[in-house]
Picture (cartoon, rainbow, N blue to C red):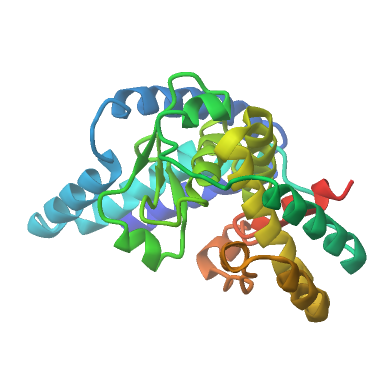
Length: 281
């Protein structure tokens, strides 16, 4: 009975964030300040605090038979510190882009990338500056297998305030991923909006960050184009060298997550490619 009441109370609070106008926006301001403080506390650690905390919490929960408490606490922190951010400014439906416009965008990106040497070094020392967040830190995870299993290039942790990336990914992907995760630290929860903000920040900063952003944009645009005009994707692939074609290979749409769908977040956690539509304007 008590456990049901705990879950019910958490559900009611999340429903309030979603449906009561203005509540999520006001709460998200406080949550963002707390997440920034958490970020500053965990930033000096030479390892991701999330990985250590997860192992410690699960070990404690299993040993003391308190696994319910561990799971509920993790859910409560997510509900209080991150869920409201999704409802501050929910995105409007994105129009389906025309294939001709997508192909033209891809062609432009290919030309810009062809004009660059595409040299990528470790971006971690510059990531905060590139994102416009002085003092912010991005860390590579120690055990990237769990992130790869999730199919994630990066993760923002509302439990520790950390921006984490898979440091074993292709070097061309990592700079943009770092800046993307730091957009979440700003309070931008929607994945498509975080991509757009990261793209603009990377282009303004320049260098390998701009090249990485263009690689991601080309990949996203080709993925959208693949669904409407596969022949155009083949034409564009013939204009790229083998290295760029590998980096920009289209990806299949992700599988819907039933938990995120239940929370009303199905679109906001999977609209990674929608930022490309803004680049067409």
